Image 1 (cartoon, one colour):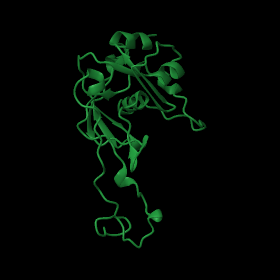
Image 2 (image 1 turned 90 degrees about the vertical axis):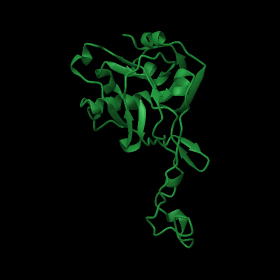
Image 3 (image 1 turned 60 degrees about the vertical axis):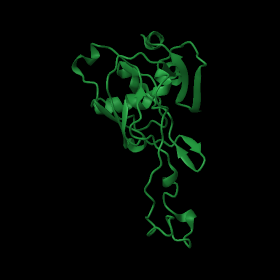
Image 4 (image 1 turned 30 degrees about the vertical axis):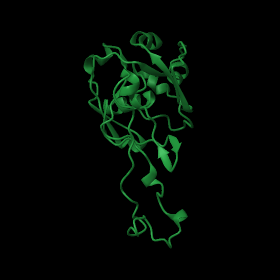
Amino acid sequence: MTVISPIQYFYIAAAGGMRTSNFIGDIALKYAFLRQMGLFKFPELNKTRPTYRELLEFPFWLTTAISEKMALESGNETVFMKNMIRNTMQGADYNGSNVDPTFKTGSLMYKNFFFVQPIKPGNVFYSYLLYDSEYFKNLKIPEVVRVGNNRTGMLKIARTNVDIKAVINLYTVQNILGKHIEKKSDYVSHLVLQYYLMGYYTKDEVVRAYDD
């Protein structure tokens, strides 16, 4: 998966702003695939919190998309960027800043926009796609999907025959699929409830984890 436009999530509180995650979540990817394939169904209107039950209706899953460095032990880590557009909604830039010095900055709209760090275009991510070949007989895997805040980021999807080290979202396997897998400790990340990441898993271990 190649990033072709900046991908932004408000995920990690970093010095001076908000940084996006260094991965693309498996749940976000599955919803992105469903939307692009025309299969997405809106959640129930009376649902107060996500349960992801609708994901069980579609027999395919993705592992968490991770950087080249993590997946292949070579290449690049996730590279971030800063938005280079100053906020001028309160008037013209003044002396290199985004507001006149007499303006109360607490009242400024989107005052942190310059400090948000999205994933830079050109980043490459790897993920395993596990699917029922019969189910995909009349369906086409998307070539491009939208992810990130308001789905403004874009990922170009391409197949590869390279075996990777995979990272699995424990929340998906245990809370959505109701399965138990071997715990790994080489890589662990848990910053939000829906993403409890563990790695690294081989291709055979990934197949066993998601196998019905």
